[in-house]
Image (cartoon, rainbow, N blue to C red; front, side, top):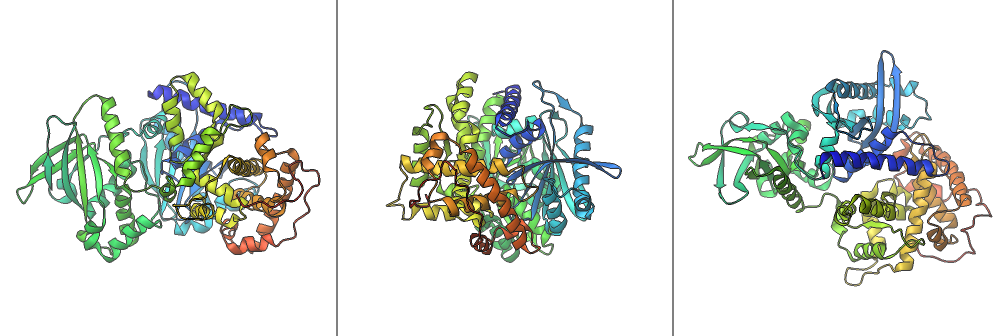
Length: 603
């Protein structure tokens, strides 16, 4: 696929999504800009560049300046924040966007952030606005944020993708552009690298001693070397994301297990870092060799250098040194494998880089849930999804056992544009289920809304313990009937999400999870899941009941939070303990799906 094809496919997806949402009962036609934001940030989240995105539009003039926001993502630990502002043109041909326009958008979003931190915006914004909860969160949590990024998203081609970082209220804020070309390069796992030239005489005080392997018949030359820790810290500070463009991951948090281990080793045992760390994998276009100080071959400089594996290590060194200035990086050494590509045609070179990146990163999982991809339960779910047709005999749900497999399926099976449309109509993105989303939906029905509020990755291990109920030798696997019931519960959650998304100004994800748990608590043993599967939807009466209880849930969450941030209160077991004992209003008597009481398991 060429860039122009990708652009047109993206525009088609945006228009199709707009049409689908406009066709839903009671839905207003959404802004194309917000659909585009959702498409782009969803992809960024899938490849690990950002967190779970929230889409919301805000535009206003405060004082002398314009403020703009299209969405945001906040880490679960509330220590890293990404803000998005979109410049959507809707063009079907490749069009350049002036730097002045992307710079202005970044400034408008920077101004939004500054007004949040100063407390100005929370006093002026209507509390019913979708962005109000974010404004309050930024105002309260800003001091603890370790990383802040502003992304300008556009369907045009940008000349400059990285701008000078800003200082806002004592914090460094990075400014980046995700244009259509950069998005395309990430989408195809290609090599959106800039022509970076790294001179190790400047960076390290001399060339890097190495073991050099050259083969005139091969596609690349190869070197093994060791980087000083300070050199990696300096390169990340100077180039930031530019040097990680070909990496399938992005540095997200120092509080996950891997990065916390890196941080602790740097602080407590820096001399053992090389023994404990797997090192980095680097690709480059060119290398210049000279004799190192010890007489061995040495790498003097690399051109087009990209870290394709080890971005977590590199960024962790930078952030740890930034947070703990007393750390001595002179004792830190990091092993490195360097692959210097021999110039061939661009297509085969792109494919080689994509494979290097993919296989290098396959040695450890990007997300904890990926460890479970080959468990019998997920293999069975994938099989059931592919062989169980919806009542119309055409449509199916898609269970994404392995991250990215939905896209791979479309690429593999769609031999033409008509094939692609057919596949997307029979298995649309709205019926794609990731493992973590599936766990979130089912955990809500299991009456674990506090766990759901922690996020899909936290809910997933608990969900797996519930569904496996035995070791891998004797797993309890769902059959077709159980699969249909699980999908019916998914439909309830997804419908509740749609019904409630415009009903509450903030914390709608928490309200949705708790409302579904209340539905399960009060009606779970009487709802006909078979009827919901047959209809692939719920009745208007059940939808009305969900809305009624959601109002009660929202009121109870605010009352019981006692001044705490509601999203944090919702993560506590105590919260569900209180709400589950509440005297909820009686359900309507005319809900078609509700039958005579009968016992059902949680799955």
